[in-house]
Length: 413
Image (cartoon, rainbow, N blue to C red; front, side):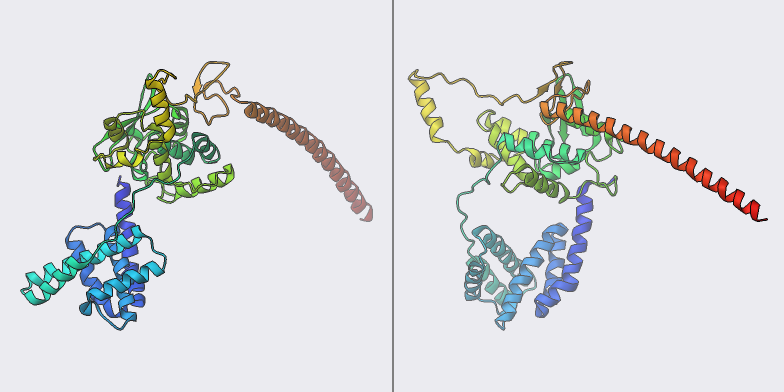
C-alpha cells in the first residue's frame, strides 16, 4: 500500500502540469520556455513536485510583473527587485510572504549563476552572482504563536464533529500533538495497547520514530477501531478516505470538519489542524522538560522551545511569593477530565455521552437524550401500530369494494 506522500506527489505533479500548460502561458507568455527549463533544473536537484510547483508559481508571478514593465528575466537589475518589493508591500503581502518570495528569486539567481559558470560564460555568470548577493531577504519579526484554544474550547469543538472517524482524528491531533502528515501516515498496526491505555507509534515524521501515549481519548480511539472498514488489515491507514479505503484521508477534509465544528460550538477563533498541536504544546510547556517536549512533539532542534517560552508576570510573582514562603506552589498537572461511569466505574473519554463499557448515560444531557430517545421510540411504535390498523382497515374496505364490483359485473351478464 502506498504512503500518503506518494499520493500527494502524484497530485502535485498534476497541479504542476496544469500550471505549466495553462497558468504560465497566461501569466507570463514571454517566459514559458525559461520556466520549463528552470523546472527541469529543479527536478534534476531532486526536489519534490510540491516544492517545484511553489517555485514555478512564485516565479511566474514575478516574471509576469517584469513583463508588465516591458522587461525580461535576462534584463533583470537590482532596481527591479526594489520596485518589486515595494509592489508586494502595496499589495499587502506580509513580511513572511515577501521573505518566501525573495528566497525563491534568490535561488533562481544562484541556479542561473551556477549554470552559466558551468557553461563557461563567466561574464554573465558574474552578473548573476552579483544579483544573487544583492537580494536582501526581509527580516522576520519575533515569531509569535497563533491564539490557542482553551481546554474547554478543544472539547467543545471535538464534541461537535459528527463523524466518528474525524472526531477521533481531531482528538489525536490534540492529545498526541501530531502533525497532520503524521496523523495521515498512521496505520492500524501503529496503535498499541497496554494496561494504561493506547500508544501511537509515529513512524513518518520530521524527526525520528517516536511513541506517544493516548490517555484521554483512548475510548474514542477504540470505538473507531471497532468500526474501521479495514480493521482486520494491520497495514491499512488508521484514517482512510471515505471514497477509497486504500488511500489516506484527504489533507483538507479534517480542516473542513474542524471549521464547521468550531462554528457549531460557538468558538470564534480560526480552528485548523495544526492549531490543536500548538494548543497541546502550550499546555505541556513547563510541565515536561525540554528534552521531553522535543521527543513528544518530534522536534529535532530546541528552537521551537523558545517559541513557547513566554513567562507571564503572574508566574514570576507566584514564584517570588513562594521563595519568601508567603504562598505554597505545588507542581501543576493537567486537569484529569476522564468521565468515570457511576454504574461500572469505567473511565471514559471526556467527549463521551454514554459509557463505552456498560452503555449507561455519563452526563445529564445524555440521560435526557436517552429519555427523549425512549419516548420517541415509544411514540414511533404507537404510530406504527396505528398505521398497521389503518392499513388493515383500508385493506378490508378495498376487498369489500372489489367484491361489490364483481357482483355488479355478474348481474350485468
